[in-house]
Image 1 (spheres, rainbow, N blue to C red):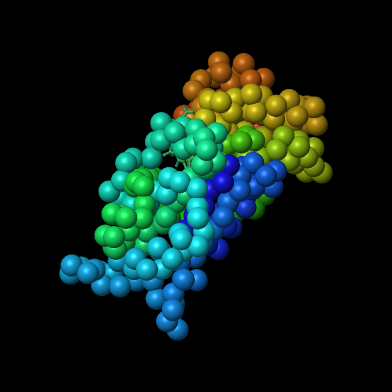
Image 2: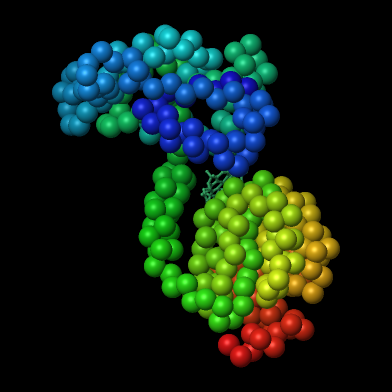
Length: 296
Ligand code: B12
């Protein structure tokens, strides 16, 4: 599938799309991502891409000329969709429709990233084929991620007072926010945390579990139910590498102790981060290697 992105921050998009599933898709040739910087189609020394709105009004909008020239030069697959708050809400149905385009004659689609107060009206009228909005849900995500980054940086790292907990999201799960919150709560409770973040291969969990200083627990998470088989694979890998280490599973996709047990885990972390801390404490207390931790 070819996706062309027109953005004045091609480096940001390229870096983000080099990681995780998108990175793998690019590596295997499934995704042909092409980035275009409208600044390459400016003629002034400052490479200006913004201008006051033609009809007046507050702020600056993106100039029409560099955008038209950039699209003209790239001949991107259509539809070309402007990303803006006034557009159709991007949801699962929209994602499926865009994916369908890959099997159609265009072989993909293109995105034009707005900036400033918006884009010159001629772009909306004559250049793009539609407009998409990432929706209220992800406006909230952006706020949450920024707040979380600040809060996380203030959590004290209290060292090995209570032992190490290994935590991460299962392979194919890219929901970082819950992992970060869960890891921060464990740190605040005095655990040293090996935080693998998202999309963690079973081998990474297994290796950490079997390391020289055995962790008090391994915690595997999933936010999407379709990742449950991947959680099961992680549990198996950890068991095979370090049978005595308790394995707990959690995250929004795992709603009960029963589901956790059906995945082969020793227990469920409960619905939120405070419950996770309690379940790690209980698992560590029940574990035969608990003597060091009891010294606290
Ligand atoms: C933010 C978000 C994203 C962001 C994630 C950004 C980031 N850096 O985290 C992005 C845009 C990447 C994203 C992508 C996708 N998402 Co999304 N996403 C969400 C959203 C809006 C919020 C999730 C969140 O952060 N919740 C807040 C956390 C704090 O709450 P929590 O999960 O309950 O966490 C607590 C517990 O889990 C608990 N816990 C206890 N123990 C443990 C242990 C561990 C290890 C963990 C992790 C947690 C945990 O503690 C946590 C803190 O209290 C939800 C919708 C929603 N409103 O919930 C959809 C949602 C989860 N996403 C969904 C989907 C479908 C996707 C995509 C497939 C969309 C797509 N077509 O590309 C992709 C999948 C990418 C992937 N491979 O994983 C669906 C899942 C549907 C389903 N049931 O399968 C949801 C429900 C949206 C929807 N309504 O359709 N998403």
